[in-house]
Length: 418
Image (cartoon, rainbow, N blue to C red):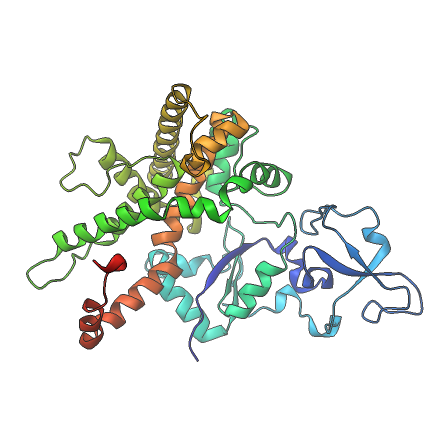
């Protein structure tokens, strides 16, 4: 059996009604509703059953936002019964020890798992426990729920409600809600928040970010960045035509350059060779490396930062501050250039995402928070998440072992006949 691409989901046990509440087994837009009666069980609708649409009435069972008549109805889950839905506690996973739970498994020396090798951790969990695994008993952290089967992953996302509960990274929540509360007040973003605040922010930006025309606008500039990255790869080859062992940091540069081109409408210059140490480009590269090297230490180990802000936490927060400063700088520059630009004769496809956000909201902080979230999520999705590292490394490893495929790829004609 081959392992499907894993998805890591953080679940707070108190909100894990997904596994025992049949309401959550249906689409987030429609569910079957039947009046309560002594003669009809929830799993067998009576003649009074009808379909009820919640498209204009937002609800979330996880956050306890319900339609007015939600508690007066029974929800029918097609082809499912209470007997077939196992409780959350039945999900397999490593056995917890008294008092210390599973936290010891990630501890240095005595632990069996290494935080910086989550791909190996997930492979081990999959082999030992199957396609869905719970790692509970993590001191100071919510449970970790690993879903390894593609169909299960699809079903989870399809059945999300209007305001799904996504337990935030505690450290990022602390940064936004405590350390920089004044800056993020009213503009919390979509990372580290959930519920009405998450939905309110998303509604302000989704119409600008989601249309296909928005993606098409950035095909050419991102293709240019990809070409620059290929040039950098060629320059990094050694005498054996191999890339250096620290090439992951170069992939960070490519991802950072690409995401900034979209979210900040600028080129940071991260792919330039021989950058001076004091340059802005090198500082932001150092910050992205610092962030990803410390996020696992801060999020998965015992949260000592709640008591004492240790070095890892200080470096982590410092990197976030560098990102916030960077976003504010380029948002301000965009606002200044907009004041000098006449948009009467400008085509819509020539207006950047940043400009559209500012035109619609007139809120530079909102634009900066969106750019910050896009940087954190975009760079992480491209290179740092274990799924993408696993996928890219697997493709590269397989490609390196088949010389004939390498030769064939050299014969593929370039786009445009060049």
